[in-house]
Amino acid sequence: MTAAQIAGLIASGETSAVEVATAHLDRIAAVDERVHAFLHVDREGALAAAADVDARRSRGEELGPLAGVPVAVKDVIATKGVPTTAASKILEGWTPPYDATLVERLRGAGTVMLGKTNMDEFAMGSSTEYSAYGPTNNPWDLGRIPGGSGGGSAASLAAYEAPLAIGTDTGGSIRQPGAVTGTVGAKPTYGGTSRYGLIAFSSSLDTPGPCARTVEDAALLHTVIGGYDPRDSTSIPQPVPDVVAAARLGATGDLTGVKLGIVKEFAGEGAEPGVIAAFRESVEALVKLGAEVVEVSCPHFEYALPAYYLIAPSEASSNLARFDGVRYGLRSGDDGKRSLEEVMSLTRDEGFGPEVKRRIILGTYALSSGYYDAYYGQAQKVRTLITRDFTSAFEQVDVLISPTTPFVAFPFGSRTSDPYQMYLSDLYTIPTNLYGGPAISVPCGLSEGLPVGFQIMAPTMADDRMYRVAAALESAVGTLTPPEL
Amino acid sequence: MAAISREEVAHLARLSRLAVTDEELDRFAGQLDVILQSVARIGDVAADDIPPTSHSVPLTNVYRDDVVQPCLRQEDVLAGAPDAAEGRFRVPRILDEEE
Image 1 (cartoon, rainbow over the protein chains, first blue to last red):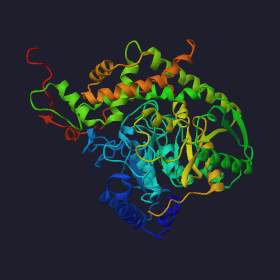
Image 2 (image 1 turned 60 degrees about the vertical axis):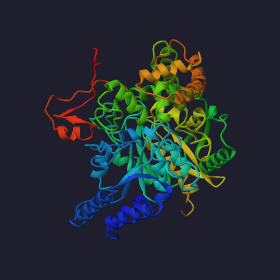
Image 3 (image 1 turned 90 degrees about the vertical axis):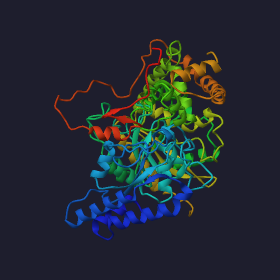
Image 4 (image 1 turned 180 degrees about the vertical axis):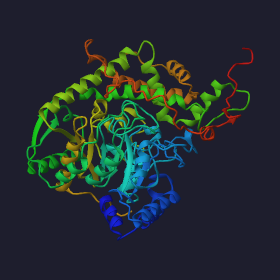
């Protein structure tokens, strides 16, 4: 059942929010030992929020379009009174004293927060193998990765533990898990959703967004969490485009007059044959709906991955300096004899996992004197060139399309020994983060029995365009149903 | 680009306040070398006249009116601290004994 259908049943009184919350909490209790999508389940809070929705309904209050619908929230987002760890040991047991703006909006809309979902530590990773609390398993095949860093959010949807989830996307962390779990994941325009209350990884790239099982559900959730926030200085003071109307228009299956751009430079990037086949079939389906396909050139996209892996760790090395064992979280080695500096170093060594340490060191290197111009400075210039590529492409087409990931979900451990091989997972998703525009991943078929994702990228603040095309594709190829757990 | 040495990684770890082990130093030096070789090609692409983009949203200073607003209570702020005393964060000694 979709989130929109659940909301409809609650609004009409055919079921109650408490019944819906209980059913999902029971499902979590039954399957999450095997999936491990959740780091923390807030049973009491969820039931209280659901009871509040039921009470408001019985008083005749008007409820929002997602009132009473359960939602799972990635653990990198601050939730008042509910533990938030960013899947790191350094924040084990920390309970934020405030809500992120988007959590406030979720609560205000009457959604019911089930708990916090697993992720790669501090959102650094492409497989959820770097969680300090153990990996999440892909509901399609429990021996494979659920994508990252939002593997928990995506897996909670695919395992029917939650109908909606929230993720954050710095280099693909909403779209890539969506692709490998057969769910929908949207990265809104940077600045279109507030970052206030997100534990920062790479501030110029981090973007929170919706995860769902259908395009319309993602659009409904996008509308709830999006929009200007005066507490975030990078928030764009414009309303969110009407993405729900765009999704419903797309669902009619008419794409007459819509121009889709295929990026020429993505063609040679070594995607698996099954991924390419599913992508091509989907393009044919879109053409049958009336869309026109044009090949465009984005010559600098091939430099996006290297630029990202200099910019993101540089910002991370600065952002993660706040985890120093003073104001919150872990403190190690404070035996009364060691100095603050020694305690700080021991705390950070014990608290951070290998991927986080690797990126902090890499970022410190890229920002250091003598290397700054050659690495970080060059990467910021490449960012300009990639933005120009997008601008030029969007003068020729309405949206750009590509596979979301070059490969389907891989088995655990198969890419951890070579970090750069792991980084290739985000090859198709990263250019959008450097540019700041919106992009969405929609399931488009199977390869070797595992889901393949189809990515649609749009100009900044034209999020509605990608929803229209995404919903049209969904109407043509349908949604995917994972095997029984 | 020069390869990154084990000593360089140790120096960067010190700058980053990370007390890494010898085993981690060996592993990171090898992995960072691979990563840096893979990203080095960006050095060839952007000419001098290309301006850098630091942010996709044009940033301006954002001010609010200078009006007192509710903020977190002191006890809420200190509640997550590893150690607190007299309404403040308590930290290990900052100066060495001889300083």
